[in-house]
Length: 451
View 1: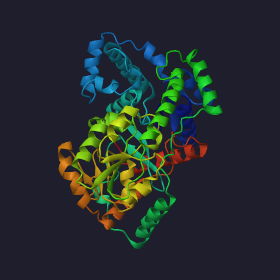
View 2: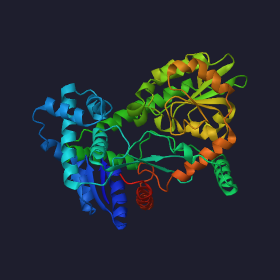
View 3: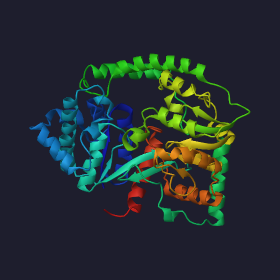
View 4: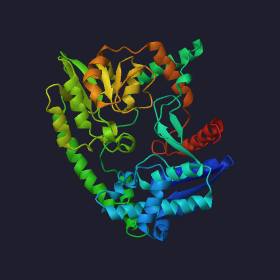
């Protein structure tokens, strides 16, 4: 098969370069498109075939911009081109006309690349950047398979989705009765995971290390030379973010409170601030403050809503946002390093947008209310809200809900059967993981029905 990886730059491009090498060892053909010119050079030096998208964008002449925009909106299943660029961080603060031209150039350049390479499989990685969205749309129109890589909690932690990044993890018919060995396997996983009592992803620490300083110097050098037109390479942002996030972390600690001993608790884990899924798939959930206030207002008397920041968002939430939430009498925020498992155990129910914490709560047998259609919703083991109008009724309802343990185990085992070895390169950039990803991608494509 012919694989095409679309990556931004540096570590991401290098990591998927190693995956590509592993795929070639399994007999596949591999090409890379990177936004960064330096990343493309590095891939070529490592023996890979790589195209710099920035060079192709420069050469992609849109002609009549409005006609090209109309053509793209007509040929692809998008409400408008604004929907493509709106979540791209490079377009933040950019004039509308410039965003339109930039997005049209992405489509023109990538359409040309797809016509040249004719990939069978496209791996755009998960993200909000225009090149990823456009690559997915073009692949679908040309009949190529798109692979999306997600990380989860199961023993084989890789979720590999084909052609769609938003759907349930398994078909309903896959949730079936278990034999004794399967039940022992899933119960063993549940015990081991709970006993481990560690976050799925490590906490984010805003600190300067020698490795980060070396990366910053390299980025500054590359940005001033080879990648002078790279919208995603902004070394000054590292310094600014470090200062701002360090200050936020210190100020936010003043808002932390201990867990009350005399109140019933409902746990709401805060979502990642710039999460791809929230921005692109469930944008109606982007205002977490509004949702938390609605949930808090729907709680019966005697209950308290407990909030905890996401491990990778420490220092990224504005203090004003956190302060707004904790002003309410029945809302409190706990230390970000508090064990999620302890919060789940202490809580009467868990309310999530689409957090993995909801899945972890199922391991504990706790009732879960979902608002953002996570991959574990819709199997009868969670209370799922399709409209926020339902919150006033469904928040009290989840406090009375008791998930069926047998159905939960059946679902968990079906999910375990659907996953693969390996992890996205952003979680594990090692060569060993690259080999595992290559094997898992190959296995997933062999298992899937033909287009």
